[in-house]
Length: 343
Ligand code: NAI
Image (cartoon, rainbow, N blue to C red; front, side, top):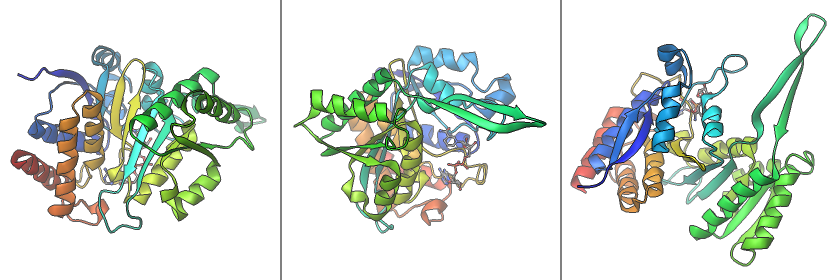
């Protein structure tokens, strides 16, 4: 009998429970060896346990060191701090890996195959923010402090270069804004040059691009890029942009890799506009599950899962509405299960 792999499962908010249920059904059909420990986080947990990141959820991930999670809702402006950011900090999930690959031909761009590697715990997402009151306006001035450390940058960059070499990639592009934020993103650029010179020169190419130019170049000629490595905020924005090149967020998975755990999820959020309607595309979460299988040393299962996604999308032509199709989440999931049962 295959040995079970303990893993935490977080349904999350909005479309989260729908796509997580779909992923579990598909992983069962695949015969993936996960033993799920279901835990709450996000708005759902605030309602059920009075805390958007309950201790029981943290304890579970500390035990399993592995999680598959649905999106978690975070209020904009006021309200509680993002549970996603807290999870990354708690488990030191310093590397966010977001591969973007064409799955459905015939879109605006063909043959996209990019990976965004994003620093996940530092930068402008550290949450050192405050307002200063002037007169009777409590929000007269807003201040945010970004923090990048040499050690944090080095850890992420070492990971990114090692990943790029191991995957047989041809080039790493360092994305920064060191012309303006000379200290905050300058330290990242400086460290990248050091890491490259010391360990990777001659093994892979590296070049540098300023983030605004990178955004433009991604739209005009995305094929010039291969692996993009950048700081937290830029990586968040550019990975959504890259997802747009291949037909949207419904197809973009992400892995949060750290010293203490690894958490796999879709890049997209809770999609409140379509939640509960049975319209969500579970593909991004399924691709995240494939990354999770690779991470757990089950590449054959991961390849079968990716193969079934390709067959359902392209041979069966079954697509959810975000991809221009008419399939519901349930129909897509059933087709996946059928493909896996027959394959
Ligand atoms: P979103 O990613 O939830 O939605 C953006 C657009 O993409 C919407 O039109 C939505 O319907 C569509 N979309 C997203 N995923 C889809 C899927 N699987 N299938 C079909 N269509 C899909 O971004 P939004 O609206 O900015 O954020 C909503 C909430 O999600 C916010 O509270 C935000 O904080 C949270 N969020 C959570 C993330 C996480 O848990 N990792 C990541 C991003 C946002």
